[in-house]
Amino acid sequence: LQADIAQKESGLRGAFAGYDGFPPEAQNALIDMAFNLGVQGLVTKFPKLTAAARQRAWAICANECHRNGVQPERNQWTREQFEKAAAEA
Image (tube, rainbow, N blue to C red):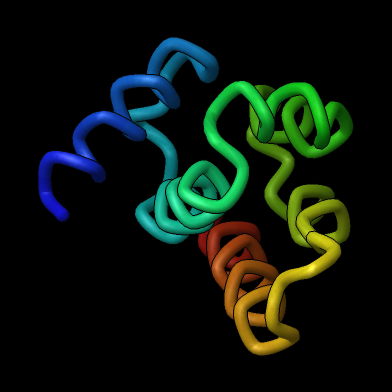
């Protein structure tokens, strides 16, 4: 698991400049999405979320993170992570 997380985070660092400075909740949400979609899938299938994350606009990320075919609870958790990041920003 740790190796998988490290691999996803490496990809996220390449896709999002300053990733290590993102709030932990935003990092967790992006990792979850990267596990589900792959980093490239996240970037290409969620261009609005990607642009918002690059601008650290976490409230927009919260509105753009819904994935089809994912359990509602998982989508809700991801949204809540971005909302927490927005509240702390």
